[in-house]
Image 1 (cartoon, rainbow, N blue to C red):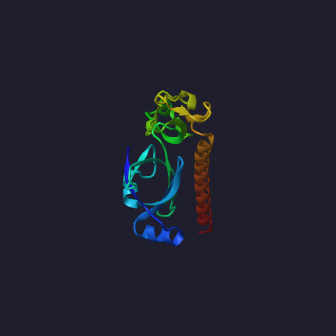
Image 2: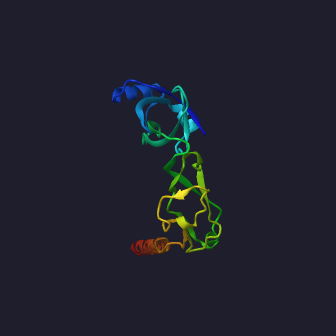
Image 3: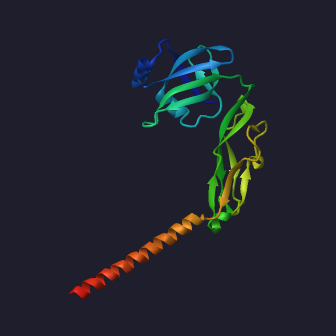
Length: 212
């Protein structure tokens, strides 16, 4: 279980948040499970090194008297710098059933790719219900048997014991499709445009020769 150190803060407001960020800290809040809402501060470098952009699973917060198990419910990011602006922590018990999203990682090369098929992943994160202590880091999908026109749906996923998909079983996750007609047409248009350009150039040369 990853651990990060937090400190309590008493002041709030946009000016205070900007001051904290200039000092290398990220404003945060912790709530849930009957506890009061507390204002926190997290060192940015520690958060990014320990958690990063795709938080999954339980995190242990240190520095609050005793370790507190939390889920990272939401992170606000700066679209220009990709730095965290604010973090929401949610208290959980390790035996509590929680609703979270975990990443779906495709493994292998589809058979259809050997014949020009294009792999398209439709669902990148799977909503699940699971005991907090058993949240998987990610769910792996073997796509090596997929031919052109084949698809994997949520019902086809091999989920770890105790993990239940919290989405329709008919939801497509990934499929292999034939090269699109639009792409073929675009190539043909480019070839035609090149031929027309060559013909126009030849016509201009002939006109020039006649004038001379």
